[in-house]
Length: 304
Image (cartoon, rainbow, N blue to C red; front, side, top):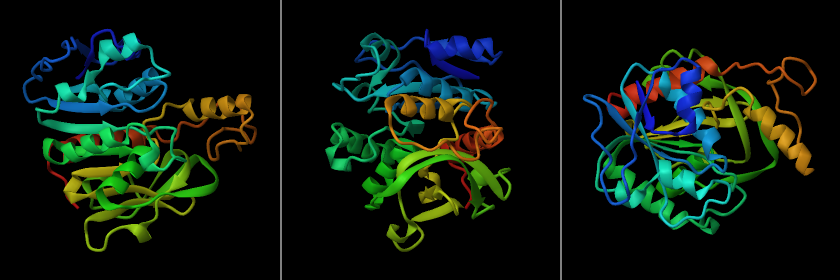
């Protein structure tokens, strides 16, 4: 059972897909979020992507089939101006970090953002994001960092830099499972596909010595895929398993219309031409990964 803010556009979409979704009323600023269902999990969701509703639906789809009561709580950085999201949408469905920071939560999802060519310190909300990442270490059982969010988390927690690529890494890339005994990789097989869309990368050579970080999935083509630290306290995923089937296609056609030089996403279209339909090859891996994260990291049972 997935609980979403009442009226969130994703609710109606998921119900049309015959998914089991319930709604809760987002409290006014300065009040506490209502109590979670008995034996349920509270998952905070810091959505840094420009198309808020698209990412809300992507993340909700990744969680909705998990057979546990999960409350997804969209969280925002106070005082930020969101250029691509109506003010009314943010006020209706998102709760300020300051109104949540006194609580303890089972999980936190920090998304990517299309700002990876900026230095981290140049991001206008970097200080506030650092505050949230630091707070999460003592108030959240596990934080899942996605794409640029993963790079930001690795930089903040471990000083790992990012490197600009010669061209955009764009498509669906096979990830080799490096540690099949890790609970996050349960059921994923030896290889799983993962959508990727980024201009930068991180490198294992910059990881701290010792066992603080472990690469548990990696690709010869796209590099580091999934990294875990502190028995699941932080999980970093450099791709987008949460993407719905047409997201890469929409990004490709968008960039073409803007005149941005871009090659078609690889390992994605059914034909050799960059046209629909696409191969939704990562659906099973996405559901498994998010369920593994919820069951083994958010409930503190990760085995590495």
